[in-house]
Length: 152
Image (cartoon, one colour):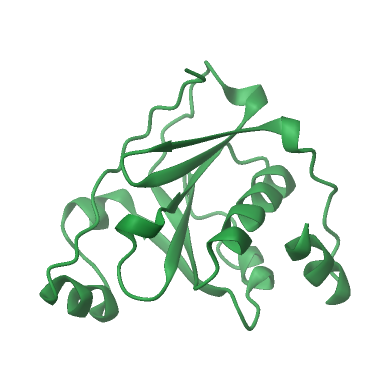
């Protein structure tokens, strides 16, 4: 995986990722990535997400797998080509609280931007970045924050 090689080249310890450790499913404009071992169980009280942006969807999908394994997180999603807003794809990695806010900065590269934490309450309240609002003015929309994931 290219992202793992980039991280190791920067001196970061990154675990080896087994593709069979994940279920990847496209639904409602999102590519959902879940660790197989958490299927059928509770994701806990997810209260927000860490946000990463890139023009490269493939890198965000790889990064999601690395972070899910490295930090023991359960679920993430990457917007599909048809639903992205502007030039960048977004990766949302869900958590119960922003406990890894500083640690995840290490994954920012010249091709991946880390934006930090966004609470689900801020999303529900319609709090979005200026960049996102400008894209909305062009009548580009993003929807679906479904937090259910099955292997069907």
